[in-house]
Length: 570
Image (cartoon, rainbow, N blue to C red; front, side, top):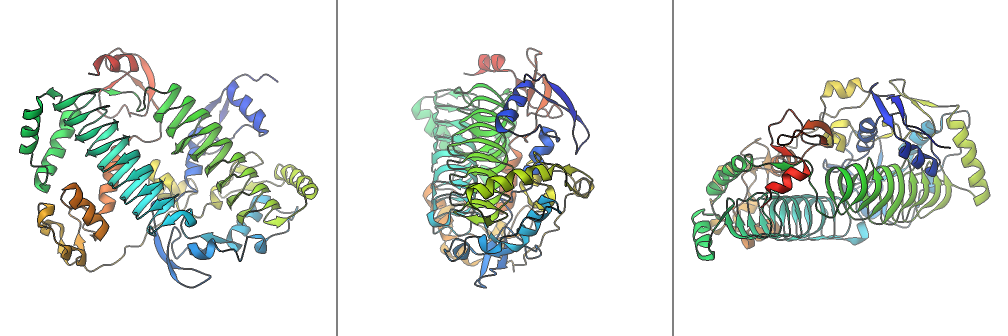
């Protein structure tokens, strides 16, 4: 059946959105009905099921030991520490529920959520080496405070990473080493205080550059050596001038940071951030992708739409897919599904090699042919964590799908969930402001409550501050191991923070002074340097062409279309 484009009213925000012919083709291929929520509301709903950056202390309900957890103590969910969760003495079928056709299926899933034990924080535990203070990580070694990271070693206080080594305070960085305060770096080495750079070495305070070696304070340059603020120097004069900047001093670095931001603001930005290996893409922070529309922070996305956070290539033939790729395909309305996953719908945290999975949460270890399961390991043909034969499974699954369209789940705001609608927000264990929705689609507490989300007031950990950040030495050479005994007051928010030995040793190796702000303030600054996951209609300043961009038209950046930007690149 050939569909035409169709306008619909979002069940959540009540605004109109368009379902294109190509969208209907995908839904038919996946054997699902068209969505009833608009793309942004669907994205926010998926983000709500992820809490990457907020961690708490609570006790494991199996062994009783204190553990770091995504779940605050006031959450009603049962939480196991990582050794207990990954142990072989349970698989999730112990908590099985018999399907009751007189009740909403999603209501029964909600009940199963509270029966089953949850992973305290999300890690490939067996591949994690000496890196306990991390979350949403794959293989990492000797790392501290990493979030959404894979294949990293000896790195600290960084997020959204793929293969990072010996680096600190990085965000959206891949295949890089010895970097500090980097945002949007790829294949960089010894690159500091820089943004959106590719294949740069010994580069400082630079933005939107590629192939630089020994450059400082540059923007929009390609394949240059010995440039300072976009001006060419001889090799001898370059090193002489850079030495005058006194890059080992905290005071000097803080002044340069301010000067660089002013300098960068004078130059145009490309309407989206990506590289030359893209073909037919729209969105932002897109790399090595093809036919990827309305995508955000993706690498190796192909034939995808409304997709975010593909941190490891590839993701193919996916719609409304939020992380992480790694050879996955045919994923719809799901979050954190990767590592060989295929044909996964309406699910969260299903990996590796999940297959033919629907309405499931934390189905780990290669689960296949499951429906409505929560915290299940290495199983096939399960519904609500109960084991069935293949024939029993297929028959009951078809009945439940029909029942979901009759005995619907209706949430507190009278939004109706039938088969084809993703997991209801009531099934998320996280409040809006502690989830990734609060990070990437921030709204006020009032608006969140009005839309039926919950809100966490948070808990401030009380630590006795023993020193102020202003007490720190101006250079690392005068910093002794004694600072590891102190609790410092952040120069910005006055929260307490400490330093670790690994961090101190790496900063000595980089010859950089210790930061005067806590991890939270440093992280928020890096996030503020990236655009939100929204597209706007914007008139481009040079040629007047109208295109969609993630640069908010209310902001003051100079934004050019692709053609005009290429004419300005040096």
